[in-house]
Length: 308
Length: 91
Image 1: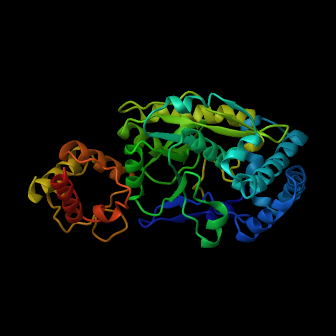
Image 2: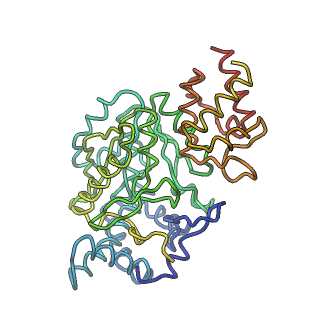
Image 3: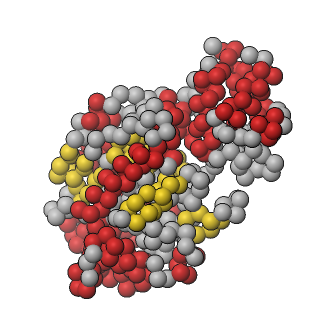
């Protein structure tokens, strides 16, 4: 990352004085932007997504620091240069704007209507084969929130989505909406893991994002596009302790603006095998991001999220 | 299990599962706070609470599957001993 002041502004310290990443802290993460995006909900989806694409393309000029990070990241991930790299960088803003628009409109539709926006659901039958508690593992790719809602619908079990605590209360109503079997669990205290233990014991689903290091002892360095990057080990420790499977899931937007939901083979974690399972997950993430480089919505230097 | 037995079981879990120094675990009392962020607590983080919960299930024979917020029961060693005791009476 070239803009060190950005990194400094996006980190803070926890109660022990240790720096922790603030993945969710961005200039665009403001209630008014959510409000505007939601207000466009009256538009037919094709028109709304067209507007989102235009806004996304223009937005990159408003966020030069994020633009620089994305460009550097795409450089590593794709090897693209020049005009190709420029196009991919714009593509991230374009695709983010569309998925962001869907987040606050399409995703809020009744569960039964969400399926109309799905072009393909690959291997989702695996969900019904998994009995008892399980951990749904996804990342900030495509429309991850829709993936969670669709899988909650199919699993017919309560789903507890672990999220970072928003610093601005005003954002809560836009970012999260409980209901339809989905409940959001902010990581506000260390005891939050007890809620997850209890939910898994009841045979319910815990959904976590596996692409954001927490800046704690629970992170581990794993090769990502050939360079070590910190990823959270917590989901794998939870899976090992509770003896539940981890079910990776991705929800990517296709050229027809419909979503393809994919569930790779579930991961199991043997005692002492947490880091191996994490590596397997990161390999899946890398494969997905390689196929859809403009749909990984990461605005940090993934390899050095704490650098200042 | 009597409260003192539960306290001893928690101390053993701190050493065996959470890898605490035995001297530090031995100094734990009913008043010792558990979560990090509290002065003079044991400083347990979310990963520690997973291990502690699993250890309690195995060693004390209680199932941690509550709908209610469990945080108050894991605020201090004394609160946790009370929680485990109440579960054992109920089973």
